Image 1 (spheres, rainbow over the protein chains, first blue to last red):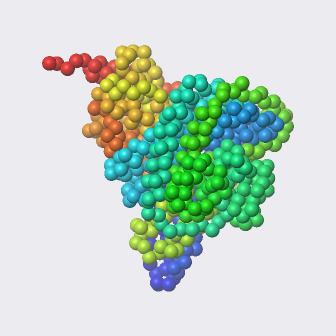
Image 2 (tube, rainbow over the protein chains, first blue to last red):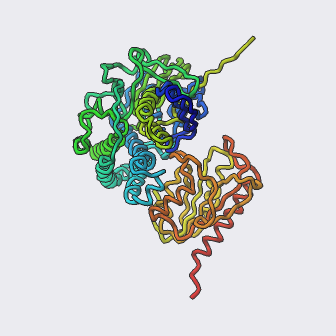
Image 3 (cartoon, each protein chain N blue to C red):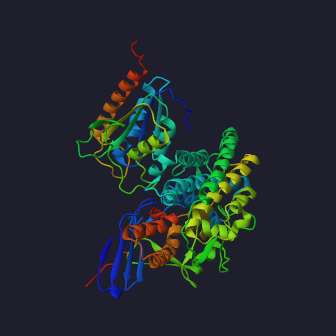
Length: 438
Length: 162
C-alpha cells in the first residue's frame, strides 16, 4: 500500500493489496481515494485466463462434464452438474429420479467439503484474529479438527459417487457410469449423522463471532424451486422479482470486460450489480431448508434474510447442516436405480443448465450441432457475477474506514473480499485479444 | 478410505499425475506398493494433502515422497527430516489450493496429528509442464527414492535392541 500526502482536502491515497490471502486463486485489490472520497475500487483477478469456452468448441457433447470439471478443483461437481443439465436439456432427455437423487447426494458432498474449508481454514481466522487457519489451530484445535473432519466426510461422499474427490470421473450426460455399492452407501449414514451434529456445532460456533456492521442493498439472485432448497435444480429468481427459465438467463444478465481484471463482470441488464451465493440462496429459499437446518438458522438469529456479507459464514454453516440433512434423507430412502444412466442421442439444439455451486449460481449454455459437436459454449461462474458487488462493498468499506491506520484498512479490505468466498480460478476464463494494425 | 492402523509405518506419494515430473511421488509409491510387507500402508494422494493428517497420525514412521524444485540436478533425491529441516515450498499467500506440505506439518503439530517420525524424500523435478510421463533422470531418482524408503521402513520394523 502506498500513501501520497498532499493538501489535506485534495489528498490522493492509494490502497493496493497485491496478494490476497485465503482466497481461491490469485487476485489483488486497488482502491483510489481523492479528497476524502473513494473514486475507484477494483478487484483485480489476475489468474491467467482459462479459455475453456474456446476449448470446448468442436468437442463432443459427452465430454463437457469432464472438461468443465477441470475449471475448478474445489467445485468440480458444480461444473459437471450444470454441464449435464445443459446437455440433457439440449438433447431432450430427462434423467430418472433415483439417479437425480444420487446427483443431489454427490452435490451435498461438494457443498460440505467446500463450505467446511471456507468456514474453518479461510474465513474463521478473520473473526478470531489469526493470520491463518494454522495459527488458529494452535489455539482452537478442537474446532479445526471438527472442520477437517467435516471436509473429509464431504470428500468421501464425492469419492463414493464420483470415483475420486477432485475432478470426479463417474459423472456422464444421462446419469453415472457406475452406481455406488449399496453397502458402501449404507455405511455412510452413521457418519453423515455425526457430521450433521458437527455442522450444528459449527453454526453455534460461528453465530457467536463478533461481526462488522454491513448491509448490502443489492439485488440477490439464486435458483428457486417450489419444494427444495436449491442445489441441483430450480429457476433463476431474485429479490427484485426476476423469475425466469435458465434459457432466459442471458436475456437478463449481461457481461462486460474491465481492463484491469481477467474475469468478465456480470450485471442484470435492467438494474445493475447483483449478488449470488449463500446470502441470495437463503433470502430466496430459507423456508425450504430442512427443519433441522431452519431451526439452526433461527437459533443463530439469521432472520428471514441476511444482508451482511460478513455473516455469510453463518449461512454457509446452516447450509452444511442442510446438506447433511439432505444426504441423510437420500440415504434413508435409497433404492438402487434400474440403470445408471439413460441413453442420450445428440441433436441440433441449444441447451441450458443452472445449478448452485457452493459460491453461487453457475450457468452453462451449449449450442450443439446434429453430430453432437459443441458449436459454442458459455459459462458464467458465480465469482464473475459477484465482482461488482464486491467492488461496491470495498468502496463503501474504505469510505467509512478512512480514519483507520493503514494496516487496519488493508485488513478490512481483505476481510470484505474473503467474506464472498471468491473463486478466482473459476472466474478467469476470458481473454480479449486486440490486434492493433496500422 | 484407508483403514486407520496407526501402529504401522506409512509411505505416501504426493503430486499431480498430469504435470510430468510432478508425478514422481505417485510413481514411487506405485513401484513400492508390491515390495513392502503387508502391515506397511502405502497411499497416493494426488492433490489431497490434508488427508495426510488422518493417515499418518500415530504412525511410528511416515515417509512422504514428493517432487521438488530447488535448482539441483533433475533426479537428485533430497532427504529431509520433516520435524527438523526447513521444508521448501511454503507459499507466501496460502489458499486452499496451495496448502503445501510445510503447512500440513504445522497444522498437524497444532492439532496433535503427526507421526512419531517424518521422513520426506524430495525428488528434484526436471519439468513440471502439462502432460504425462517422467523425464529419464527423474525416473532414476524415483527408483533411488524407492530403495531409500524400503530401507527406512525395514529399519523401523526391526525390533529395537534390548
